[in-house]
Image (cartoon, rainbow, N blue to C red; front, side, top):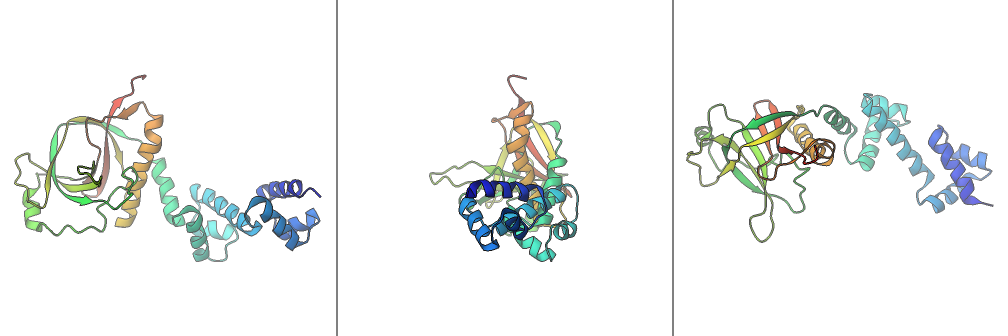
Length: 270
């Protein structure tokens, strides 16, 4: 008996039809127990796990198309939304609602372009946790302590109509520790408290990405991180621009709006 040929035929049916493992076992002439044993020995995963994962990928496709989390759960055979949420997190690493918002982020990312003169910011310098990826870890300020400077001193420091600036700083010591900088735009001659650092941002041309608003700070944090991932993993590759290494990229928090500024130059072959 050619087990592999039988299983490949069954796998093809599993990928194209809504069929149960018991039905497949009967069609292939196996007992249910024997069918499950052979399937796992060949593919390294149980038929039940394979079917659950396929249902989850079908649900993910529906979420991308705008289906609600509840509709995606029940149309793919899950008895409860909470059970669907738990299974979805195991495979995709995020809740279905977060996954859907991440898809929305990707769709809306069309940058504008802006030239910005040199400016200064004064900010806290926060050492990052080990192995943090600065290209996908935006809004690193979430949950951090900023009480070292009083609200009054902070307000006196800020330039008129200021925005708050967040950026990653390259390691400046032997241990290679990355740091995240966050603070307001200030005048060049600002009296910066000892707990903060004055940072210069050179004049540059920028691609400016608008980050979708989040209903909570956690959602905003996730949106910022998703936009950074999109920029470095997709946008640069498909655009006519390269990163301008003579300037800094940064997050700009302007009231309710969040923007990401990425310094760019035209690619040499465009």
